[in-house]
Picture 1 (tube, rainbow, N blue to C red):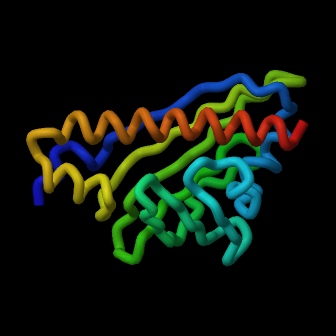
Picture 2 (cartoon, rainbow, N blue to C red):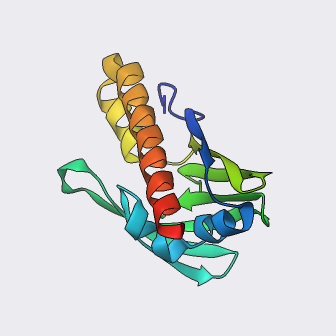
Length: 159
């Protein structure tokens, strides 16, 4: 199936946060608290600490998704990443945090990469191939804005 550029579509943010790295690490790995901070993820719970967790997301229009995530990177206190599965064998996305120690502050790089599994984004661009670039960029922009919102809320809660 032609995915019109969905697989590998990526976005990210870089934010200097006013928290030391160890405090920020406790936040980015606190899956159970993402519902307090994220505009989309309203629930998270560890299934196996440092290995797998589940999450529930709510999108505009009332769509909800239930996903299982497998931790692929756990390098305390510098990198934390996971693949997202929606029931199929292939991950539909990869999320990752990279933390850079700056003493009383931490530089955070958060990234999202789509695919190769199925997702709402893929369904949208297959349905509207003439608008694929616009749909993909719109979603990537939304994800980047959500990352900034989540990090700001996390910083406030952990300060």
